[in-house]
Image (cartoon, rainbow, N blue to C red):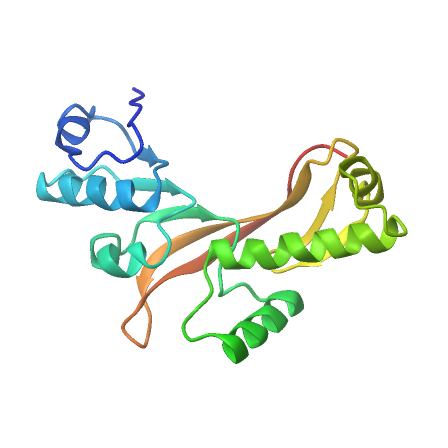
Amino acid sequence: QQQWVPLGTTDMLQYATNMDTSADALLMWLVPSDAAAFVREYRNLGIDVPLLMFQGVFDPTFQEIGSELIGEIGLNEYNPGLDNAANDAFLAAYAAAYDGTPNQTTAFAYTVLQAIIAGAEASGGDMSVEGLRQALAGLELDTVIGPASYNADGIASSNRTIVKAAEGADGTYVWEPLKTYEGVGAPS
């Protein structure tokens, strides 16, 4: 079964009640505010089909509905709990400049800027799309999510991490990394 939910939908009751509850799991891929509305309806109806969340639900929405997601599984590209040198450096830089914990959006802004800088250096300063694409092709980058590389078409291969929703020691909700799949993406 597949249901398409228009962006900005606040009343998710029709989607939750129309769901085939004999399924083994529900794969949910919604923007955070829509996901929050759906999870609330889903839980209010007492549906017990496990949720699998593509990209999970990230902050600040995750902090609002985290108690309703404890134990659920998701897929994240970025997670502050990732153990690698580039993420450690990013977390330190973020903490020096901002309060709170970085999320996927801030981590990817940081990573994209790193890729642009690496591409500009490798291309000798050619900032055209084609110049950057050629310079990045095959270049291995050490990113916040681990090693990443681009193919000749500019499509990245990088790590993806399976996560589980949990309550952290400080009472905030976290996505605990469970397993990382390396080099997911475009073929070389």
